[in-house]
Length: 106
Image (cartoon, rainbow, N blue to C red):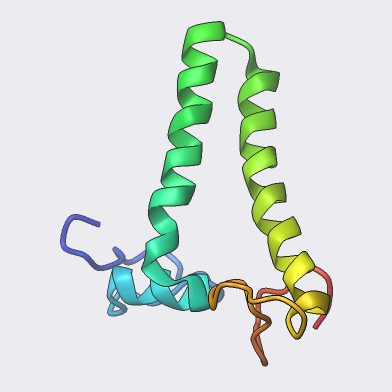
């Protein structure tokens, strides 16, 4: 990963990008409209969970922090779907046509 490209796996896994794919391009494609700007949020949430676990030794607290951050993004996205015409949602939360990583159908 130091070269910015995925290293070849012994057997290429079909759902992972190939070794010739640039890392940031793959991340941007997976994150969709949120793009690479979502990385600090997700990395920050993982860091907070690691700090919580390190300081309290409570695995459940660290897991709750991770699940809570995922739930917050999911709820924000789900709330924008029916309210998209009534409120101004950020562009990265608005529904995207043909999105391959939906949480609850399309």
